[in-house]
Image 1: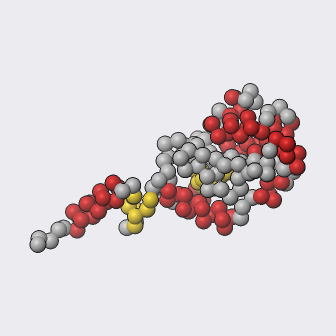
Image 2 (image 1 turned 90 degrees about the vertical axis):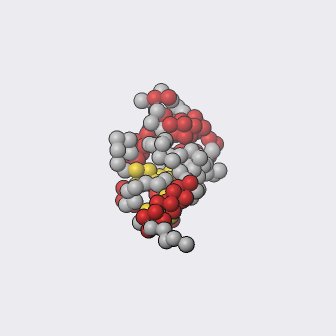
Image 3 (image 1 turned 60 degrees about the vertical axis):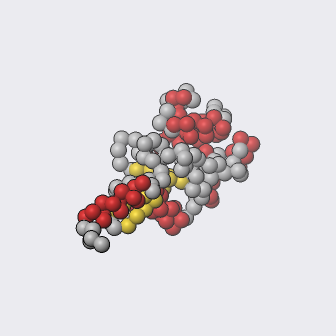
Length: 174
């Protein structure tokens, strides 16, 4: 049987892995199941958002509207860092430096997002024109509006999940 050249084997292997939905990086195969096509939003099939059942319109005065409450439910950095590393691979980011991403709650804790749900946490890039810092500003304004009673919790949650970049204008808050 004739010997197949190494470049041909590598090319055929990469093609087979790509057909299986895998990518090759530094000699290893990784599942790439989440798309970057929705940035600055997460892939809705991977992170559609998830809610903390303890936070409802009737509990906001004892949960999100209490100063410091989010610190009582925020997951540990060891948990979020491990998840961030896994999800950077799932998103197929070429930049794999964890410091270039914030493991962000899609539905923020300030609006009743599920603290440890993988459906609600994703590696949001800290580079580009629309970053996690921009989203933080939107989250804070929405929380203030919810706590002031000018916007319902459900409307704020829906606006952030639909498109946080337009949430304030869609709710008449910009």
